[in-house]
Length: 345
Ligand code: SAM
Image 1 (tube, rainbow, N blue to C red):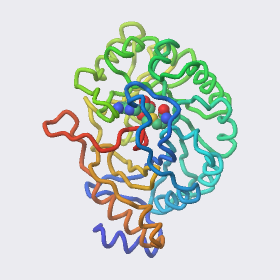
Image 2 (cartoon, protein in one colour):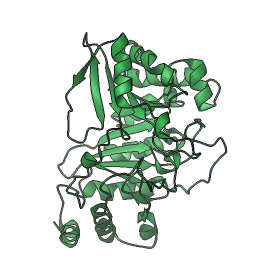
Image 3 (cartoon, rainbow, N blue to C red):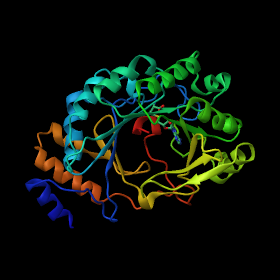
Image 4 (cartoon, rainbow, N blue to C red):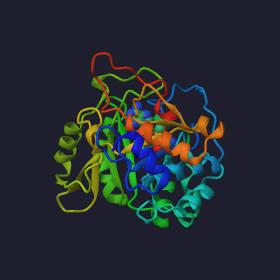
């Protein structure tokens, strides 16, 4: 359907799907609700407090998210920065849990966090209607972990957060680990054991050129095949089938069927062809790809007085122009102007 007719139907009635110009269905929205973070992970931050982008009010995020949901988004993931730092988070989750997709279902509502404050917030978030959390954790060894986060006591806090989330029923609980050669690749086998002991799904993620510093090289990326081979040597793996075409992780269980790990390989095995995502930054800009060179000021239009019909037409137009793929590792690749912490990972 052409952008103009999509925009017309958005104005007149509900849509069943949001599609981009490459025929992909977009059903997944990631929303950053702050770009502040209480960790200074060595591969993400310079260690200095970078430029901060303005935050919107909780009601403003809600209005913008509702627009996307009305256009076919069925999965919303709140992120940051560190979303648990954001005042009003529980109220936002409660309001989102009351929304329905264009198909009449509750939203799939998830959150990505470093877990530092999760011990106190897991149950309130569950009670408010959150379905799942993903906790980022880049080492299972406390000393390595704290060398990465540069925050003393962070390992114990995150472990308590993970256990509180599991106890609250925010499951399946996923742990995302970004691997960098020479930083934390010695943690791979330990994470495989951790997945089984803690009953969590550990997902290893290839490092992408989205850091504040200039650390990224192809050599620092630990590729999927190496991760799988190393775990296989100590705990034999069996690959699991994908549950949906837009699934980003290759999933594996262990040969005894206990536990699960996954590998997300955006660098060595890009999955752009099945990408179902768009992002909203904490200052209300749409990013149609992590590596977009342009952002689209949805909030600016809202603040200037655009009504929902105009904003929906704008979203449809922008989603139509979503990039076909990223160009990591190719000659001429340009890092986006925002780093991961300011985009919303
Ligand atoms: N503070 C939250 C957290 O820690 O999950 C949400 C924001 S954080 C930027 C989201 C995820 O992005 C984390 O798992 C982090 O490890 C990951 N990340 C940051 N920089 C990355 C990079 N250059 N490549 C791949 N993942 C990255």
